[in-house]
Image (cartoon, rainbow, N blue to C red; front, side, top):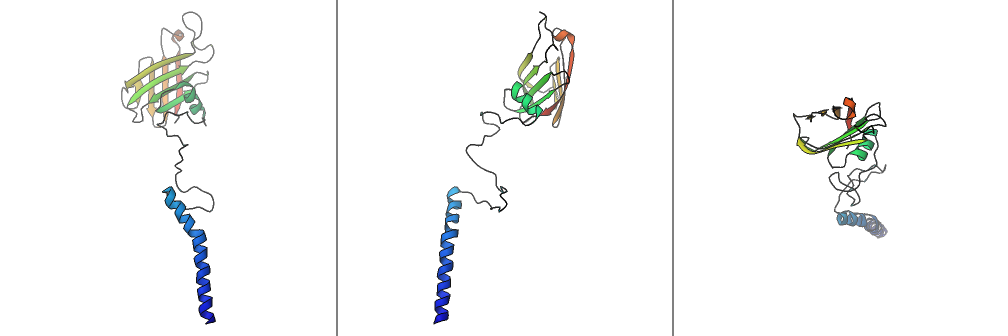
Length: 179
């Protein structure tokens, strides 16, 4: 009789522990609609789905830039898409935006460093913008005459030259993909 009482008591205790710890956890998982493995090290094993996260295609503010190319892109490129940005040794900056399929360019922006691009009035040009959209000349190349960009994966080489402005100077950049 004692053994039977001990066995029943153990089952009641284990049942209570399961009810107290396991059932609420299962209810939470079902309520959230997400079944995600728990990591005791605190490493997220599933992608978070907070409503506060911004999607790259949403029209919210851009995240804080982490690289120089991202900082230039945040300053110069305004349209959503794939940004390529860079600066040369003279302090001139360039940014251009492509559609995600990289078949169309959307905008080109150039900011010249102080004193690098005198205009016809003797002042200095600080920003030039070319607005698209326009098809890429060939896959991986934008050729607008005065502006030529050759895209190769995550990098691009850029040349800007215009006889009427900037005293016929030629500007060259190496640009990087800046998401």
